[in-house]
Length: 512
Picture (cartoon, rainbow, N blue to C red):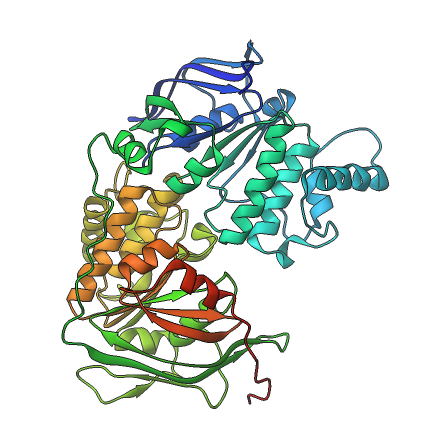
């Protein structure tokens, strides 16, 4: 590791009203290294880096770049010091191309598009980015949008790159590509800071790890000397059991019978191809697959959010009614029957919650319509909001705080907690721990296990194969819109599931 310091923080403190986000934090980042920053949700990781990138200004303390004191009061100042941050929620203009977004806001004399395109292409070639620079943002996948953000800061000359939860919405394959690129940047002398919760990725990619707890600096350790257990204990300040207790399913009750479920996309391609499976109350059915293979369409079809073909059948079997055909019913009707979908979207504030509304009002969005006349009853949603804050340890000044003021992980706790609290007969959850710290993740796993014991049929879409194997009773693997296998969670291996995820499938494109 190079000895020259690229960035140093001394005694950084930042408060928001009565909330202390960071207190006397010290940090060192060397040239040509990858430093991970770990901490629970709300521990001050993003706030600290927002001060380095000019989003916030510290109340006290000093920032040094290349050994010299730096005053960073705006992102423009940060770029002047060759610091660039790739945020968890991308800051791109959807109707612009990649190239247009990369140069947006730069005042550099006369604009020469050919010169710009050559410089951008040189960057992509140098580090191995794979992207169509003429493609518009709204046409891009999440990983492509992230690539644009990274190229954007490199174009501006960044030598210090900060990535906030860079792998939160990436597939394992996309994560590997990103890590290869980061290693090339490190070799090129760049200093890279990664904010993440994924401990196995920390151990794989970083040289050192800095741990924050409740806004304060705990320690910095060499990654080669750390383990997942040791890092977790430093994060939490106590010994933590990293095991999921999976009880044998009892008194299984058939809840869903899915037959010939087929979904055709707007462009005519097949999203789901004759899917057939059963889901039982009292078990967790895992869904594994490479991102974009039909998981989203599967859950949305059951929830009434996707149009299916005429031959498709989704039969729901509640206790108090006869079998109910969900195909053709509205999402509201399906939800009233007891089938709930908790999909943690790529844009939590854009699709899952309303950022300007407080936690109470976001609870009320779902189904609280009691009250007289035009008045809404806030008593029940307020009670639910406070219960979620307590049970999931949401870091927030109060239930009346707008959710946009919460950290990304705490936003997610609110989103997941709202769905689980409704206690439906069928609960579908997709990526429920995306972006959560290890302790919060296990809280969610335990909540799902409790719902299973109560007889709920749970369909769990996840991206961590270790968790799927440890948590789920059965695991259904989807590849290119078809089921390639259903395996027993107790005996399945990652290798077996991985082979099913990449197994070639034959399509029937004659579905009506």
